[in-house]
Image (cartoon, rainbow, N blue to C red; front, side, top):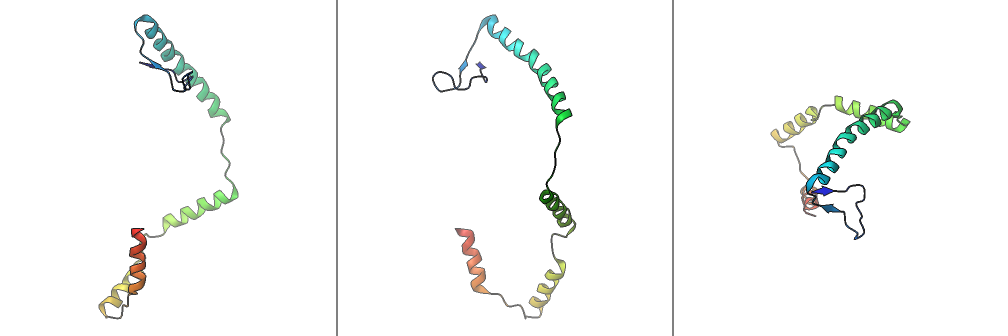
Length: 108
């Protein structure tokens, strides 16, 4: 089966695909296979020499912030220890309405 990607919207509005037999189909497939790598190589050489990326000041700031965040621990162990201690001595108070609101927000 040969799919023509060069004209995806054929006369009937759909992409053309046909099943070819014989040498015409083989020749068509062979010509596509041999010229495509050469064209890709030439295009990639051309793009490599002319490509460059410039980050805006805002993007550079975001990148610096991301690097700082990577250095921070995922868990605030001091806060965890405070909560553990307050649970252990019975002084921990939970806000049941806040907990219920958070649970309901997961449902919607």
